[in-house]
Length: 187
Image 1 (tube, rainbow, N blue to C red):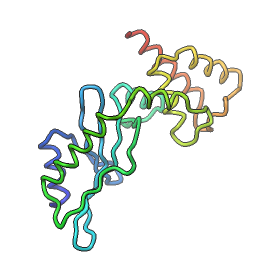
Image 2 (image 1 turned 90 degrees about the vertical axis):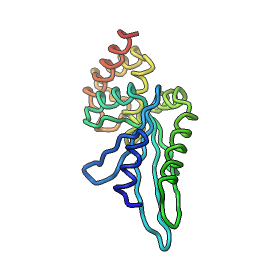
Image 3 (image 1 turned 90 degrees about the horizontal axis):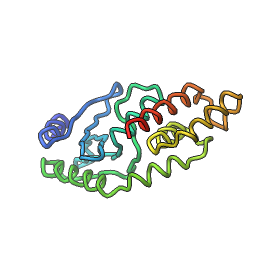
Image 4 (image 1 turned 180 degrees about the vertical axis):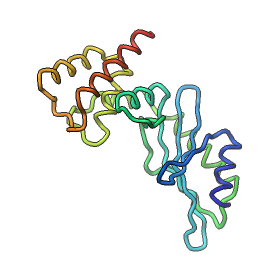
């Protein structure tokens, strides 16, 4: 198979696909309560083809909160990632291999405890590096922790950044409070 055929097959079995500005290929499959995504590639290694996929998982609600709080344009915020992901090798990758990869990705997604992932991110320290602060704030918002987020807001207003990394400004905290209040009003 060629990568274009892999993409066409994934679309044919219900995945939506896209490429980012760097050229990475993504396939997304929506289950009733979660969304699984594969960043995939197809390579030739000696006498074999290799289909590789990094799996991630989210929900539409978490992605919405992550995007709003982070001020980004991405339509997907990953709640959890399986870095080992998919690694299928054969003399020639065929449709059956891509079908197998699809089934493995969906089975992995269905076996994950999304509530635990939210609680784990909500429990991150405020000085978590990288994207940890946005994961933390989005998880708190999803879990309805309005008062905790408001206490963060009050701390920022008084000049105490609570150890958050420099890119997390008061605007992030304000957006997290707004998302949490918006969700609380809907429930």
